[in-house]
Image (cartoon, rainbow over all chains, first blue to last red; front, top):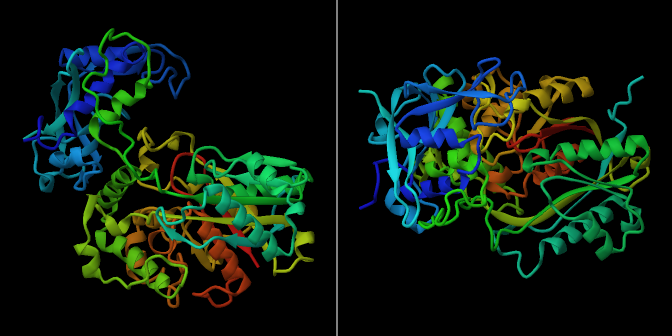
Length: 153
Length: 403
């Protein structure tokens, strides 16, 4: 039986996050995630969001951000259902559902994620979704929590 | 006074290796196939390799220094590449034309060589998951970029997965259907069926399409490009010089490469603004190339549109103005892209989907053959052809050619 939520990519892929945590510009996202809070980097100067958390605002080209806590709900912008595994070890995870979610209260802030615990046939662009926190515990390394999304019933 | 490249240069030679199934070009190397294609292009043009003095390439096809030393080219006066990948396939001929018009070079090679034996472009970009990654200090040295934490956990592992995201949104916004993707696939397979160079020639029915293995909804195996080996090269010179050479010149009317800034890397980013997300990213280069050439979509007789994934042909039909935005489904359903009967025959060579995938160079080769009047699926009286580079990371590109 595969580990993890139905429709999720293999949870072990999350381990890579541990290799990025010395980056000041992205670490706040993961710290909030471990506390089950969904946050976004909002430009201090003009209020625009950016993802991934780049070092400049694309709109006003200043740097400083506030990490704003968001409600964790959003709208499914698009998705795909992976039916064919690219490697044998992915076979037990298909079908899994990579997706983009646009987050409420953060215009233009799209997260790459998975739609989980939902039959692929029931997924549609525009559906309302909410965050589900998924923690993976790599052997000999700190746990990593990533956001996945499930339909708001 | 502005200097334009319009009608100032021409493609004078095309050369190619056979097209092989993935890995079957061995024991040749990519460099060997590149040299064969270049020498064949020189021969086609009635030029000597000694005449070549420039390379304008894309997607890291070959190192001009290597080719020059291996083939003993006397001098190189131009050596540039568009950045990123297949997006620059057509635009690099425009860049080479700029070199010629300025007088910085006279005879410029553009090419691609490809061998997918040990490595597949469409293969997974994931490293095998290592449960121990991050062991030791969590704050240890970075071996990966911070952005990967926002991508890798979710399993978008291959280019086709990313294009599936665009296709799914196009369907939701505009009512585009899988039948419309199938029309692209079936039309191009029909074109390939008449070509000895094509890898896939067996005709396809709609049933075949819907019975094909699903890869990443909404894209099935038949919506995905072939994986092939081979090399194709073209040679560009000044229009004046072209008129003295062996073949009928194929003039460069216009070209552009680039795109909206926030189209950006597209794959691995996905923050493209709403109004261009479900598109090919080509609207800005289409506009500039048409303006340079002084024409519109109505003037194009045959379109060689980069078809790594069938929905991207639909989106390019919109972005190049062959039909309104969002209406490409109905446009192809009405038969408009078919060879003999369509208002704008598309990929008369069968394309990446059925003939061979040489990252966009087969599209230029077919355009040249159409305008010379020697194409297998000849469009009657073809005077103007459009070729495009891949919908992909910026810069995307296009080329308008005429006889």
